[in-house]
Amino acid sequence: MNPTEINTSLFKRLRFVLVETSRAGNIGSVARAMKTMGFSELVLVAPRCADPLSDPEAVAFASGAGDVLANARIVGSIQEALEGCNFAAAVSARLREFSPPVWTPRAFAAHAAGQDDLHPALILGNERVGLPNEIVEGCNVLINIPSNPDYSSLNLSQAAQVLAYECRLAAVGDTVDERGVGFQGDAASLAQIEGMYAHLEQALVAIGFLNANNPKKLMPRLKRLFSRTQLETEEVNILRGIAREILQHAPKK
Image 1 (spheres, rainbow, N blue to C red):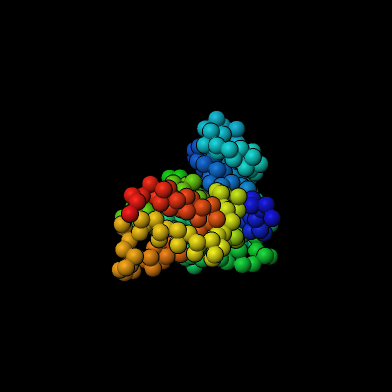
Image 2: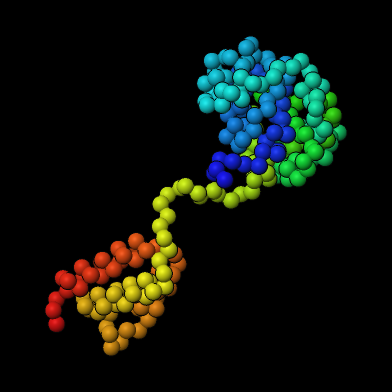
């Protein structure tokens, strides 16, 4: 499988909704945050900036996520924005007296990723005033991002990035794909490693670092050290080459 291929289930189902966003740059930044995590559906409710999809600041802040920005839909109401969704999550740092259940981003992500028939929306409000109470009260849950209680204010794109990251982790797991990254040689055989140890021991004796008559625990400790490295054939050859040079230049006894 190609390293860039992923399970696209949640990536196709999750919608990001921005309500009355004031700055075009924030819309572009959210598009970028979404794309870095594999999401693409962006809906803008009554944005307060002119031409939010083509504004130079929005395009600049999207920085490579121009397709997400260009394909964003602009609607006039939250009802239009949520058409086709069956689960809505308001995002706010401010808790309400009359509020739906409060979830963390991780709880939402697990819930959204675990149900293939769920078409969830994450709703983020205006930069200055957040979401109106009526929108929050109409949602299934309120997402509150755990943060410093003395300064809990994240900007719009930072909040979107946290949410998108948690949703990606829930969808694909937290393992790092190492395929195609860096050089990986053939693992050295046990016989090759034992030969290296014998060669290295000879070299250490030759320069007086190891007393053959009183070796103590030097070689067992070196073996323990190298056993943690998962030696490759080429690495064994390098170490034997070093031992060979030591033997050639060691003083003759």
